Length: 362
Image (cartoon, rainbow, N blue to C red; front, side, top):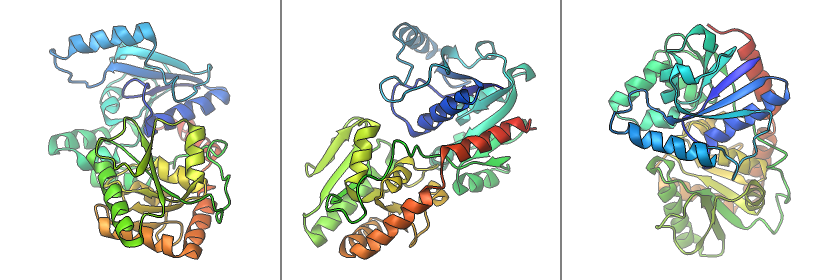
């Protein structure tokens, strides 16, 4: 099968949604499919004339230096054809059996393509963007879910979003976890598990400041006898000095950090999935999270994680304290989470995606 995947921009920076697409591409290519990934310089279908020269210059620059590729943070198999195009105009898109949009902006283009570009699918990770968008953008996002496109969602939050938009999912395929990369190295009771980690992201709705505030509350209540760490892109200027920071760590380093952690915290207000939380569970950390939507795909409160309402810093801190003060409960949550997350293999996800694509769609 000839499969075209369309990303919403260059792959030069680590992004969870891109990671999922590159992983699918690698595994589909190894199964014998002809996989092409398109990266556009000009994303929006209604880009203004004023912005076009800037996009053209960026297109030329990345075409020359190849910086649209994810070579610094993710390995893409040579079998996968990575392409950098000026825009997602139909003339830049190869003829395929299947064409897959991966963001609402790309879906606006894909819905307009002719039949020769392939049967149209939409791998939906838009939940947090829909929930935080203004009304006009929400209407545009909702419109992409309706009509001549096959919707594939990854979490219960995605299913709820489509229903609210008057659309339906054609397939439900939770994301996979790379268990060769993110694995259990330290026993659940190991003395090496002393840390508490959390992801740092610049968007307000990712809740980075909430996670910091919750940990400050924990320090006030239980003292300073725990190690805190975070990771992400550029270090936030507001990060306290007592939190160790890792800028764009490799997967190997990240796996070791997860394995050094007794607890991993995610504090997003909205999330389409929440890859760091799932990866931490695979490495044996107990997950304390807000019920941000995507987490419902792999976490159940009181069983595989402790959840609380988004933005409830006191409740988040209370759940962290509960696990710090009750090692048996922490171990129970961590073990149950580890066992449960093992069901989310990439083989299962790719099998399901292949089946959906082979079905022919609408």
